[in-house]
Length: 193
Image (spheres, rainbow, N blue to C red):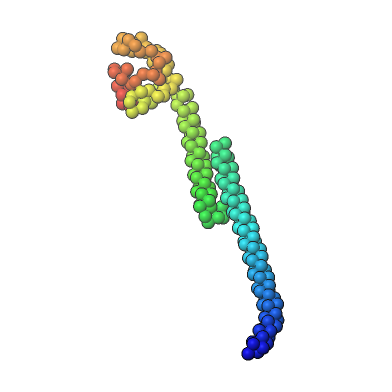
């Protein structure tokens, strides 16, 4: 029995000696595959991080460029130039901001042109009133004289003595600081108010 057991142990030993290298080889193949997979995963993660960085840089560049366009338009508006143009093609918040800025610029330009036309018209009217032979005086809602033409000033200088009898503080040179109430006996001035 001892001899049979000895033979069995020897055959097991031979089988073990033959199996261990095969198992070690399989284990090494498995370890190599795991290392290759880990390396592949590291490469994939590195590529994804690189792609994320490139996309982040691209997005930040787009945002920066859009903000620079907006700033250039605001700087131009600040300098009185309402003719800036650019393509606002983005559909995001910056694109909507750019579109709103273009609308604002257009509204400001239209308003400025309208004010310039009205100013030119007012200058023509003022020029005509200044040179008119008829006396013209304009007062605001509080009866403060805000405009008088030369004919009115000449009349007031001529009448200053008579007007000072009613109002001793009257001075023709101070007509733009007076109220129409300074002329109680001149009903025409009250009617004009």
